[in-house]
Amino acid sequence: MDIFDIDKLPYSEFGSIIKRKVRLVISPETTGEEKVAIVHVNIPPGGISDGHLHRESDEYILFDNDGAVILDGKRHEVIKGSLVHAVKGVVHECINTSNSKDLNLTCVFVPPFEPYGSYPELIKRTKDFLKDKGTNE
Image (cartoon, rainbow, N blue to C red; front, side, top):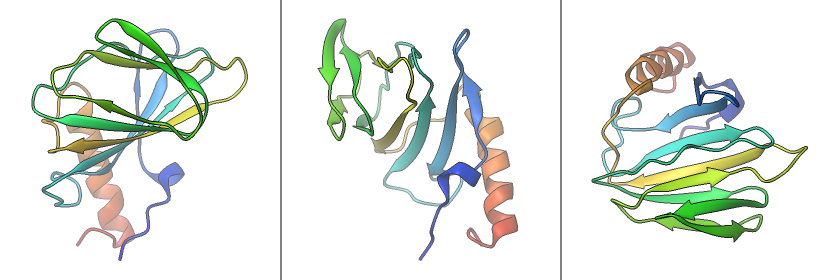
């Protein structure tokens, strides 16, 4: 059994003005899991995840606070504890509507997404971290 302390995992910053912290918790490249990838995203007050899509993966997004999501151009308000399903190919973005609280998202990708952008570097740092901790041998 592995226990992941999310706050100790390496992260990469995404975004231009308001940076969000992205951690790759589980993936084929980091833990060897082949069926899903799990990403943790911390969005500061007023932040947004930028519109994007995943061509080969459905994404399930669990909100730890109130916020909003835009799915194919339509905005939906989301309450704390909600699970959003972004179907593969659907452009989506998550918004922290709070002026004072961080929004933490747990994102599950089925099947795992193909790494892009800053992910290859984050994969290397996460693998090194897990190896040093004895979690991923």
